[in-house]
Image (cartoon, rainbow, N blue to C red; front, side, top):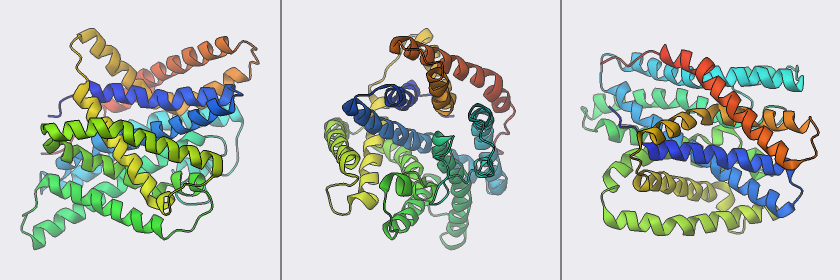
Length: 358
């Protein structure tokens, strides 16, 4: 049984707001400095989402491999459970975007099959731009259990089950990271943002990093020197990442040789893992009502992420001159839609998801 972490729920809320609020600013503000900073913040918000997803999801790899009899069946259950969690809200959002933007092109098929940014050139910049990150998640949900099963079979045949379940999951995640490293390192590109950062095959390692982080932190969380080191590294890494992304925004390039290919991602991933670690470590919530509120808002984070761009454009189309009214309407409608999607679209599917076999 996995203990619920309200610190991670709180981080889910914060990371969704780190995307939601900057996109409002980018859409409504004419201040170049404000727009630039909002762009940088939104990147970090998405990256925290990726690593947090791996941190929360990869631990269920234990449920796949703990029963040799049901390993492949549990792999199927893992995939179906993830699809049952992500597909209902995604396809509702997709239909909403199609209707709102009146986008009836053949490229919709890419969005239906989660191929909109599988490789470059991507099509996810057309009308449902935020969907690029969902494609990354869906690909990982398929690759991870398949590769995990292969790793388990090798362990059984050649190592006689010498390697533990936790280590097998970490090895699986590490193999994904190595594969993406060489794939990205040998790729020639012109634009880091659209050709590397938003291409699904180059980003599945972000979720794998989160998966490794979960198992590593289980052993590190009680070591005092680690806690102190992470507290000190957090502002230092944030400062470094901000400066590098700031330079990228202004010059479309990074300052350090080689950082743009791979190193910048790993620095960001490490920062995200430290953020997750600290969120668990420093968050202590005793009030039950506050726990319920945080848990509920955390459940809205996914539909909020999916729908907020449409809501922003919807309110902008009303052409209301008062920016405060625009912001109030965007917030109110976004949270209302998120609540409705969670309770009337997501929850019915979540309740009927299959369970792992023991």
